[in-house]
Length: 337
Ligand code: SF4
Figure 1: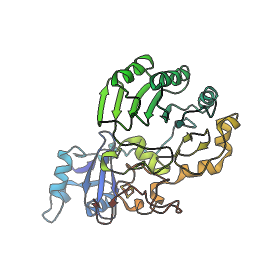
Figure 2 (figure 1 turned 120 degrees about the vertical axis):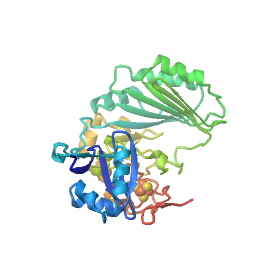
Figure 3 (figure 1 turned 30 degrees about the vertical axis):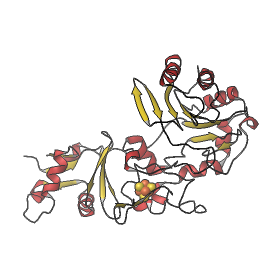
Figure 4 (figure 1 turned 120 degrees about the horizontal axis):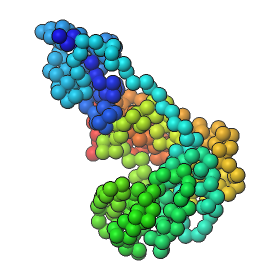
């Protein structure tokens, strides 16, 4: 006889102002539940006795069955044998990812930057190319620098395809030569297309951006939610956009994000990124702004699976203001058109 209903440990309920979610961090999905059911789960320490569920007055018998059918929960005799996942987020890397903007002229020493990134064990480099001349050779030349580095994932974004007319074959040749190049996004293209290959993605987008203006960065949509372990647990304790991130802007200055107006110093001016990070509390302070501290987001059922943005916010002077590009109202559970 199964005496309890419980959730799988990878399925975590999150309460919002108007409704709640259960986020399945293993299958990267979520379902909605009413807040009343969330409260009941919490009150009963995430286990509900089967005899309660079977009572005539129990309002959520059908919902409980649906949750079991959708494999977010199950019935069992010994719920204590299924402990909850520890809420921890720890990565050994001092920096995990860097955004590098590159324009027409050389503004910093790229080779020295790669050595500095090795020192902080950075593993992802997102490189935005603002000058499209000789682009295939340029990407190949840049990728060469990362051989024997800690960078395991290189992604390029080509800002303007109008003049260079880049073909998919050209992009595939980069991946063939440099398998660390995992993704290339081409903007200002004539068509939209996403083409996935084994270990490589080519994305062609009609939309264009520039290096400084509001570009749709931080666009919030259910299509962009990431219900996975690292996003969820990082969001509980850190800012899920800026934590362990660094950016080098088009002039070679260190920023938290290329769109931030605040820069710290020129990358060539520092000998060690490790020392820069350790000694610069202002740079690190943005890493600690969690979704639970952000206005409106703190009441949203999507807050631990939704990428934050601290540059484009509703109130530009308010560090804790909601992301500007979000059209969701968690108090009414409505997406504005
Ligand atoms: S309110 Fe905040 S957490 Fe919710 S969808 Fe919008 S940006 Fe994401």
